[in-house]
Image (tube, rainbow, N blue to C red):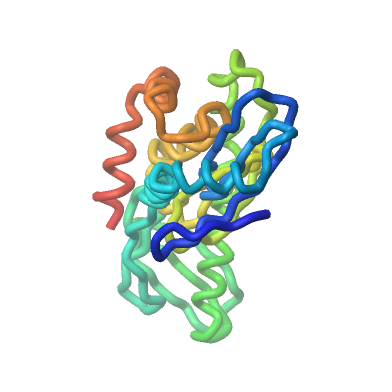
Length: 230
């Protein structure tokens, strides 16, 4: 791992030497940077190239970070609305009862031994629902990528304060459990977005062309996710 300073920003990058003629730089959806250099490249030459491409690298990282959740925080009190798969449910808490959650006539019914348990019970329920829905949508969506010969990705669920989803250079798809609050079309959009990044790592024309081919309705669901999930 290496690092350069560009203005007030630091850019960390992984340097990989390979049998190749030219130096290449890739920025991945998790904002990591890899530099692929010929075997005989000096560190000085590599650093010079990274400095030269620093503005582009930062632009790519900022573009990846622009796909972020805007869902307002919810309170865990009676009467508050909570989202699930794009629908609003009004919270009703029943204290002193066995813990559990049911959806009934527009209400999110939560049984909890004590008020202090409510938030944890709801968050655990969301996480379990997220795991099931994300796995199901990924399995239904992945066949659309058959001709691109990418391996079926490992799915990870992790809270990310500024991201709906991401993926790693090794092919892991990471999704925010908050995404289960969005309609299934939004979830499918995020999953397809990350799968496209396993083929086209940066937000290039080739990336958007691929996304358009796989999921022509992506703009509608992106807008719904970013501006209407309230």
